[in-house]
Length: 122
Image 1: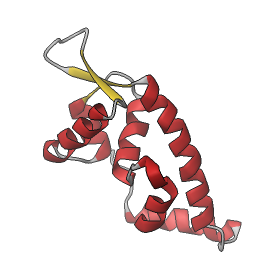
Image 2 (image 1 turned 180 degrees about the vertical axis):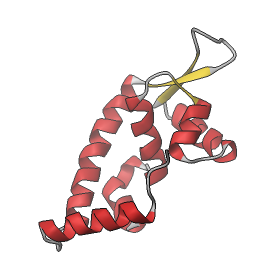
Image 3 (image 1 turned 30 degrees about the vertical axis):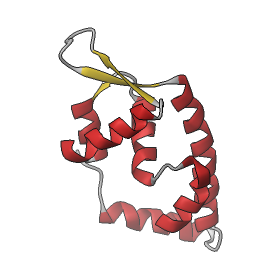
């Protein structure tokens, strides 16, 4: 599945982890790094290099929080938002490809089983 995802992303050079990070930041503009780490289930040693990579590519911006200037908030840049739009389209096609041999009932069963394996954190 990882190889298929990589093929779907092609020249965009975004793996599942970076894609997930962009999606979380898009849904939560100004999110603190610690909140992102919790949401993405990453520790600081994994998160910081990922953010550095996204920032170096001009996809994410770190800005000081208005409430606490010691804390950085995270925002997608215009380039990041444009790339994420493309990525979401590719991910949709990737998921359709993966599930192409499953009936609608089988897809529902698969989703239900996957949710039981890793239930949502509360």
